[in-house]
Image 1 (cartoon, one colour):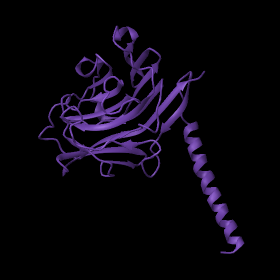
Image 2 (cartoon, rainbow, N blue to C red):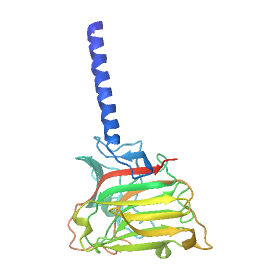
Image 3 (cartoon, rainbow, N blue to C red):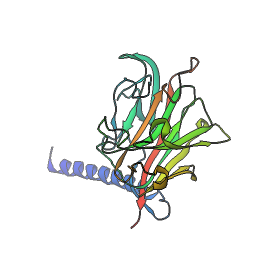
Image 4 (cartoon, rainbow, N blue to C red):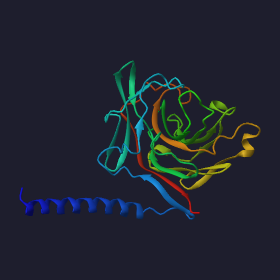
Length: 272
């Protein structure tokens, strides 16, 4: 290749790089932070594949402490990018020792956050036994120290209750069924459309929002003499579980596949 063609190739590569970076900057510039906040991290899922700088996977089918039926994989059949969305898809299929597969993505070890507004725009799937969630675990989580590490459930949706979402805080002495949570019932089927789910989290306080409306608050006072474990970094999780203690058995008439759609995940923090 002569020098002229080498220079042309360099110019083309430079234009592609500038176009790509400009597109990313423009996209971020179009996001309007809530008053008093600034955008510190986001994934708009507008690439060709899941960004491995942001997300990794939990793998396995051992019930995940809740008697769940699915085997989580990292296959594109269960998690992929389509039309600017993260698609988490549950399938009815024989895989390893399970009869269902799905995916559980997490930012553990990649993106950790302490305080701020953590928000996602989601479309959940409806039906008996489906359990999509948007939640966080303390970054100290090592597989054996739950609930001491802390857990913040930003959104849990139980497919057999189409008008209900839940937001819950779990810690030592207030975990599982004893978690400090709040049901939020609507007058419509939540699974029919996209909705935004968020927490606004600061030292000693967490607020939960559905489509911009506050419906739950947990503070130091709610924990009482138990340990408050939320003044530390956490990582984000998105998953679609099937069956288990909370949603109950999978309905015999459920038609698979089922898709959990994620338009974006954004983290804003207060401007100092």
